[in-house]
Image (tube, rainbow, N blue to C red; front, side, top):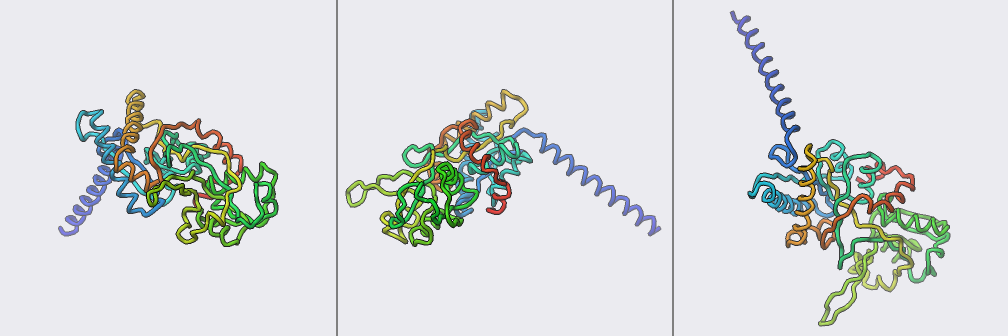
Length: 340
C-alpha cells in the first residue's frame, strides 16, 4: 500500500513540475507578445554610469516617471497606461547586446559604441537625439595640447615627439586626433594611453610627455567679484584645482574637425503596427525634449553627460565620424570589452 501511495505521490510531483514549467513558458511567451509600453513589457531605457551609478539611477528614475506620464496622457488621456523602465548596466557592451536581444528600446551611448552596434553588429538602434552642451553646442571636437616649453606650435611640430592619448575607444581622445596626425603625415615618438582626459593634461603639465589629445569645449562666462570673466571648460579645467596655472603651462596647438555630440538611440521597430510605431517613437522624442526643459531634466543631463539640452539627430548626421572610425580598422567590440 505504501509503495503504491509513494508511486502516486511521485507521479503527482512530476506532473506538478511539468505543469509549473508549462505555466512559466506560457507566461514568458505571453510577456514577449505584449506590446512595448505595456505593464508586462515596459519601454526600457538604458543609461551607463559615467559617474556614481546611484546618482544615475535616481536621475534615470525621474525620466522614466516623466515619460510614462507624458505618453500615457497623449495615448490614453490618463496619467498611467504607458509603462517605462530604466536600467543602469555596468558597460556599453551590455547596452549594445541588450539591443541585439531586443531587451533595450532606448539608450544614451557613446559615438564609438553606437557605431559598433549600428554598423558592425547591424542592430536596430538608430540615432534620434543628442545632448547640447554649454551655450548651444551641438558638436564637439578634440584638441591637441602641449607644454608651453615644448616648442610645439602646430600639429607638424609633433614629429618624433612623445604623446599621450586617452583610450583607444575614445573618439576625442584617440580616433579624431589620430586621424589629424596621420593626415598631416606626422610620425609620433613614444605614445601612451593615459585612460582619462585629465590624466593626459597632468602628464603634459608635468612634462612626462611633450603633447597629448583630449576633448575640447568652448570657454564659458562666469561672474566673479561682480565681473564677468572667461573660464576654460576643456579638459584642463578638470585639473585646475590641483594645478591653478595649468592654462599657462598647457597650451592648445590644434583642433580636429567637429562631429555631432554623442547620440541617444531608439529601436526603429517598437510596435508591429507601422502607424502606431511611428506615433510612439515621435512621442518618446517629444517627451524627452520636454523633459530636458524641466529642472529634473536639466539636472539629469548635467549628471549624465554634462549637457544643457537635447536636439534631434539621425544616422546621417554621423556619416563623417562613422567612416573615420570604420577606416581605422580597429576591433571595436574588443576595445569596448577591455574598457568595461
